[in-house]
Image: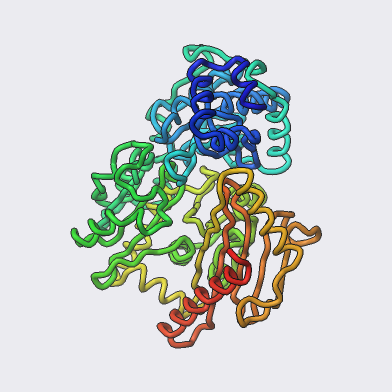
Length: 546
C-alpha cells in the first residue's frame, strides 16, 4: 500500500498530516516507512513505531488483530488474554487489540497494569484462553514496539499454526476490513492483581520460604519486572531486594538506563555500582517485559558479570543438587546455547535436547516431554523451570539464581566459584556474541540477505588459520532439526560458529564458543579460549568484509 493510499484512505487527519510532513522533510524516511508491509512473522511483529505500512501503529496493530481474529473464529476461539509493557503506546496498542477482538465477538481479557511477558503466558493458561497477545519489543531501543502471539497453551505459536495466522493477516488488505468495537464493550474484561497472586502462588511451589541471608540489588530497567520480582523473591524467603531507584519508574524512554537490555554491560552499570557500594552479594536485572534476566556477582570485592550461558549452567547444576530428578529428565536448549549444558546433563544421565533458536521452540518441545521437563535455557538470558509458564520467565529466573547464590554463600563461596567448579569438571567453555547491524530499510535488508547467500553458496574452507571441519546449512532438508536460515561451522580446534539473521531485527548474529578439556590450568585455559574467540571473530569479519 503506497503512502498516497493512506492519504486518500480512511486514516485519521493526524496520520495524514504526519505523512505530508515526512514527504517534505525526509523523503527517504517516507520510502522506508512504506516500501513494504511490516512482516507478520512466526513471532508476530516487531518494528519502529510511526506512520506507514512498515511501522508499528494503530492501523498495523488493528489489521494484524483482524487476521488473528479471523483465524480464531474459524477454529472456535472465544477468549484472548492481552498484556502490554511500559513502552510508548503499548497500552494504546493493547486497547486497540481488544477493540478488534470484541468487534469480532471474541472476549478480550486485558491487564489493568503493565504486564510481564511470563504473566501473559501464565494468564493465557490460567483463564483458558484460545490465544494471548503481548504488546512488547522486549529489550529493543525505545523507538520500537511489537506484537507477540501465543497459542492456547501459553507458548508462542509455531508451525503450522504460525503460518495459518500469517496467511490470515495477509488477507487483511486495509483498515476498512477491520471490525472495531468501543473500549467499554461488555466482552472486554479487565484483569487486576488476582492474576499476580495466582502466578506467585505457583512460583512459590518451586522454592522454599525459609529466611535467607543473601543481599540482593535489583533493577527493573524501567520495565514491568518491578510488579512481580520483589514479591517473588520475598515469597522464597529472601529479604526485600534493594532497588536501583533511578531506574524504578515505568518509562518507555528508559531515561536512566543506557540500554534496556540486561545482556549488555552498560545496562547494569548503575546497579553494579550500587551492589559494590552497599556490599550486596548479587545484582539481578530484568528487561522491559521481564522475560530476560541479567546477573552480576560480587566476588572478592570485584563485580563479575555473567552471560546467559553461564547463568544457565550454574542454575542447571544447582537444580541437579536440589533433589531427586524426574524419571527420564529432559534438559532443553537452543542450538546456539553452550555445549557445557549437555555435559552437565549427561553426568546425571539426563537427555539434553537441542532446538532451533528462540524460546518458542523450547516451549514446543515441552509439549512433547512435559512430564520429563526439567529445565530449559537459551543463551540470550532466558530460563524456565516449571511448566505453568511457557515462555522464558525472568521473574522465576531471579528466584532460581538467588537460591543458587544463597547455597554458595552458606559455603563461603559465590556463583563465580560454582562456575569455576563446572570448568574443572567438564572443561572450560567460553562464548562470544557478535551482531552485524543493517539499516531497517530495503537496502539494509538486501545487504543482510546478500551476506547470508554468499556464506551459503561459498562457505569458507577455513577461518583464520583453522580449517573448517564441519559445515551445516539448516535450510537443507534431512537434518536433525527443522529447516531454518542458520549456518553452523565447526573448526579443527572445535571452536563453533553459528550464524543466523535475527527474527525480529535487521541484524545477523554470530554466536561463537571455544572450549578446552578439563584438567588444564584453569586461568590459562580461560585466557586461551577467550583469545581464540577474539581471533576467530576478527578473522571471520575481515575475510567477509563485515
